[in-house]
Length: 217
Image (tube, rainbow, N blue to C red; front, side, top):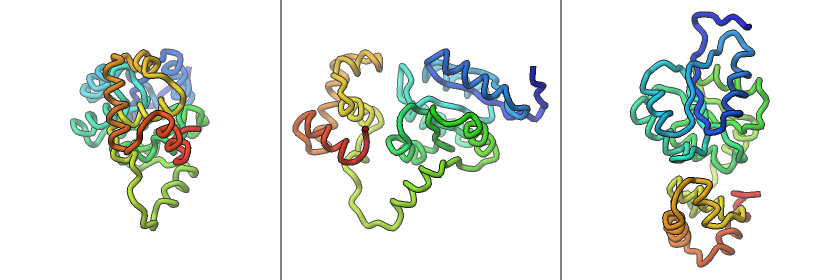
């Protein structure tokens, strides 16, 4: 077993999949200066865990059963503004990264990132710096200096944005309700808000918009 030093960076993990939590623990255990001190599988548990004040960095999944990772991030930054939060996601960086950074995240990593990138991100976050991958840095650079109107999807709430992406990916309202542990009525409400805010008439136009703006593959 790798011996940890007393000054190791204390990390908490929030992900609803046990196999992912264990995988992240294994990566952290591979280095002497990072140690996992707790884990949670939903938003409420995550907030309670962070309130204990035992961690230096939180690894937070973008999708949790009871609320979005962005919602949890905003709550944590409200209560514990100095706690660095790294967002993890199976989605491409350009789908959620900028939204997460605007909400106060210390960085954003795809779950397909190399273990070395994760450790590097944890170290940078613990040191008070932002972690931005080269591809995300390029995306941010592309947005600087352009006088363009704010995209319609920027006006969506986090849940509305999540619903839009899932609909555009081909999932039905029932599929989304099941995956997010919400009622069909609630998802239908989000869908209606998305269409109204974005001045769209139906799912086909929504999907076309999402594809045109590279929000889904």
